[in-house]
Image (tube, rainbow, N blue to C red; front, side, top):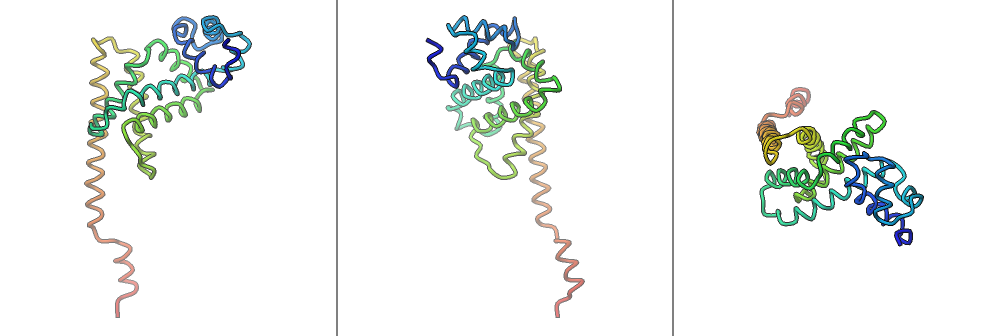
Length: 212
């Protein structure tokens, strides 16, 4: 029986069973109760395993992250730009628009601001890891911050996109990635140029303490 399963294992099963009900009942106790019925779980046990919206959405995002990692396993030969684009498109293709709309509506509420930021960061981190990124320095954070902004904007665009095969969203992703790549190239040029310029501190030091 479902009650014999540890709560930590039962929770993601219940959230997965909730997904067909979320478009109609939202991320709610009603959808959880329906998932409990579908899985033969006592409603009280289900409420213990999945006590709140933060748990529901956290498990949903964790499941999406795991799905993405599996789908991206065969992309290691792609260029980084192509891997990130593939990660963004794959994540959208694996999702459900109405389920996502319901989640975004909740996460837009002020009381869920911290949860929204945390889940968005986790999604961006999962996409970079799936793309093969192993950075641990400053770039680790800048990459994820930039991708978080792209992904957030892409989600909003996707939930309103009525074009065939979401062509408008795919074009939107391409434009955003192209913009980031141009910025990175410009930053690299500026960094390279600055490394060849005289060091002002060194020049001032020589003026103050001239060589004998």
